[in-house]
Length: 290
Image 1 (cartoon, helix red, strand yellow):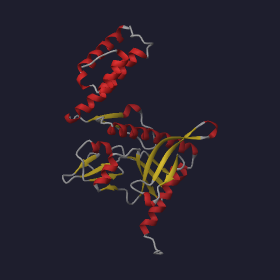
Image 2: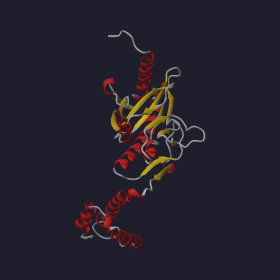
Image 3: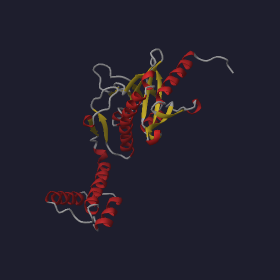
Image 4: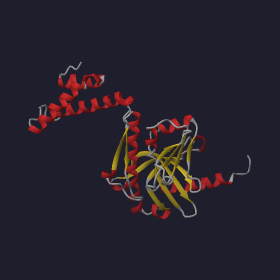
């Protein structure tokens, strides 16, 4: 035993306690033990209000806590960058200010825009807006990538988190951003080449659905993946039109035109349909596509 502790380590622990106290008002929160800390400090499950005064488990997410004086989250090693790129749970950064007893929560969804480009040798997640004149995601010539996380999605004092009505508001805001992050995680892992984001938003407010935007990656090397997903979606739509509507074709003139157009598209893209789509069309519609 050393009988001493580094000053910054102790202050960092206090910040984690501050962040944890706030998170516990909106989520079931488990602290990651020091020996198991690989990049985030808390594993959380949103606490959804349920009947009879109960809370049910909602979507899960992870949080990295930082002190107000050290807001950068840095990923240098190749393994760390790959870990960030393939996270399976939504990831947030919480910056705690001990003096003001305040916590700011940042979404890290902008990291996906960084993933669309060349793999960097270093990634910095920077809470707050980008440096003047810089885009939200930028990479230097030597491969150092800075991702500005923008304004916090939640900024509140401890007393606000402890207020049940305000905590409910924060929980609803977090839910939106958790779902957004989850959609991007699934898209990236499954080879879909677009990122869903938000054009602009206000701290401590839910973002309107009409502010959501789509960033496609038009790289030709992803043609096969795009075609595979398109084929599955078109196949599912065609089978739905046939079977969900009582097993009969829709005879409304506008739907007849749409069905005919969909049939033509499926046949023209036949060579790009994967085996699952082909088998589904054969089983449900009796089609044989070569």
